[in-house]
Image (cartoon, rainbow, N blue to C red; front, side, top):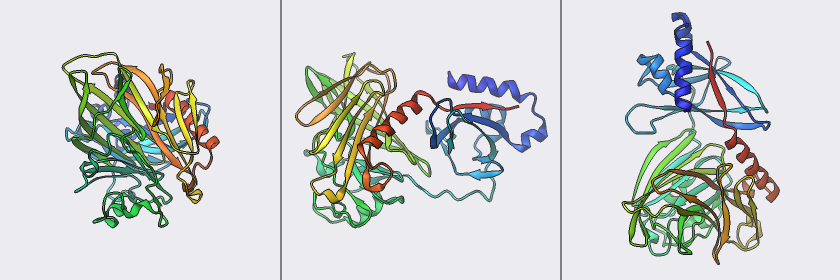
Length: 388
């Protein structure tokens, strides 16, 4: 529906634009409909309507200007057909504020685009690891097969620049479990323990009272990798429900400045066991406090990162869209946030983490305030309108 409305607006004003106005670019406004501030939030433009109005722009790289100054943007080919279909940039908004921007073809002297996100497929381990300017994550590959499942690991970092590739490189040749990135040498470390749990917000299916997980991913595809957004698709083929075999398609998106990954999952099988009970989980840790919010639809943990107090506090969380019917449960190893899903239907939720030593979120109260604000932002998406 959003795309159709966008295209309709394009046609309504396209006929009235003169050739001079077309050369000047396309003016549009972005409105924050919520009574909350939004700091460097990602704005997404659907390029289909732009290409309909300007067919000659198809295949061109777009640029965003604000007050005659180009700002960093990123074009994304989400369906991998060779044509970019989304353009993103980031901007801050006061409560209920409207700001004006302009869309151009990218000039030759375009602004530099320093990378603040990164995703790496790491051989020979076959790990998939990703990060932004606040936190890092990974899912495990073949080296730890038998000791782990589809859980999401957290790498705490206290620097804004990318560290994943660097830490893996420095740890080459180390024995499993003895990697150098388990010690903080000034940039952060991997203090998190996942094992065969869901870790920091991965998901499985509860069937006959038992958690079923899909094992390690078998295929991956990096869709985009910065400078503002990373997006990767993972395929899991190890899920069994009764006698039925399932393929799980998981898409993970992380933007600059965010603590939470956007996770989209689809469960596919020739046999239909719908409705399925999805469980997104957080591994239990010592000296932590669990919080559950039905209103904001989140499950949260906050407390000691590990046994050494110098390593501060770590928050983990799972957040479902507002209005989702959710339940909460637990077993001896982890807490769960549950919801029913239909087989073959894509579901979306968010999960992630925050480390106090990064300095952005330093207390349980700040972590829960962040989660509540995220819930408000997701329930009130930015509104885009094109001007005549």
